[in-house]
Length: 209
Figure 1 (spheres, rainbow, N blue to C red):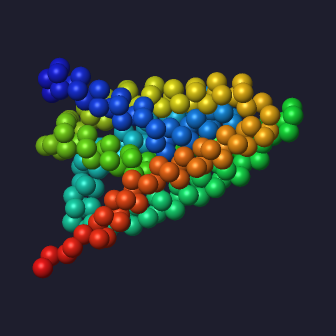
Figure 2: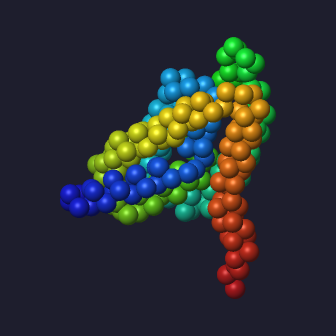
Figure 3: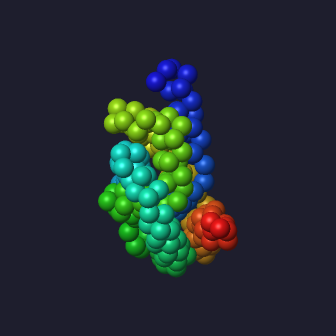
């Protein structure tokens, strides 16, 4: 991979990692509710899970979905249901009383890794990155793409957690924190819109003959 292509890959990784999506919205909510240190496993899980996902998709899972498209439909439905459940949990998170530690627990490292497999934005990022920068789908090229994403993704998603931490200064009242959590839940639901539009378009597409 030439230097120009490598820089283009890094730019693509940054642009897709820094823009709003389920991971970033949940990290901002976690930073606001639990602080940076308790959100750190969540951040590491996002970055590590996406790196592993990129390699595994390139090594064969993409071919499996091409051969059996219904598997992707099943994954998309499961991802939508899981994100709706997460949105409900965020919206109904009880704000702490004065002097009390935040209730609930931040997402764990393993849970954040697993979440990438039901995150439609992560799938779009992985498939597009492989098609553009590792079309041969060899292990060295996939490893390079994954490594660049890993190096760029972690600080990018970390900025959202930091943003959430900074918002704690204005979320000192339970009513403000409750409103913030409900807003994050609503944005998480809105982030499902591209997935629903894609599924509807495929469902309305005419079949052969």
